[in-house]
Length: 423
Image (tube, rainbow, N blue to C red):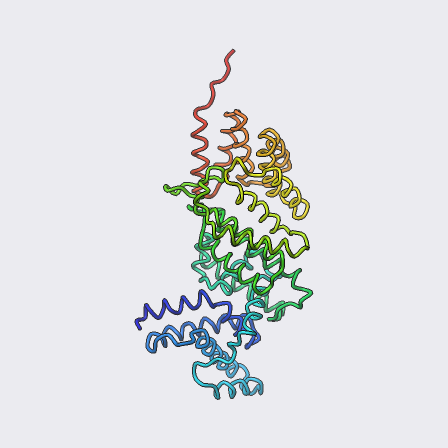
């Protein structure tokens, strides 16, 4: 096998099984930070060995064994006389080469769940949680994460290093929370997965309208999560992502320009994703505990999914759902989305009144979203000059190149400014 083929094989295993590998090594070594280092050393060893001997029959087991041997070497260097490590070393020496006793399917799921809870621990900053989760659970390299979030590679590496040090200093144990703790701690995990998906679905900056690799990774993480922690809100988040991702094929035209929801060709929507999303939402509803914030957003997405045309959308129901969401998880973005729904249900003037009230409070700061919505509503009211001014303000504030193109197109469609009345 060539070095190139060996590298491709190692990368494929790591991308799909990184959480299992790091989780199992963390359980074995009792040190989360060390486990990630051991996994990287095992990968480096595999690059050499697999190019000579080929890919083993059990590549994950091979990597775990290699990582475990590296752990023994570390233990011996730092605590040569420690009886525990001596026993571990003796046990390992008695095993057959390439066979890993840690690869117990019954324990692996708990390892992955523990890894997700640690990577998303509330003691870490939001940015650190995202970077660490993508690194150790998603198997993404620092360069991939940096590219996805448009920051320098050293910045991502520094975030990951600080996160590991913070977890070590806080003495966070590598374990799944007690059953009664899971619902509370789950919120942090769900938030991280949601933020990853949001950046993938609605890129905050850069040249592209979406970052599909991030959105895809978030959906993969959510599917793992509902299997390991089948809580209603986890299903609600998965439903939201599936229903939103179903529209991806229609969100960009053949020229790469963004297409707004009301203008999308709904025949291009991914019907399989729609079915998966609705099934996940039905599971969340069936739990009978009432929908959480993600479940309510999924219900809004379902309203769009079931409408055959934009004109058939049940905007009154969407307004009600946004009102419920605003009570449960109040935020300026929710209020802005509610204003859009009100505009669709009751006319642009009613929506504009809500947007003006939100803008006057300054809660969305320098976001381009309020003037974008305001410009759209003013356009519908025929107030072209005011609409142009609002859209130009949005253009100044917008950091995404694809979205800027959409704003420029809207401004151009408004035509030249109306002549001043000289009478």
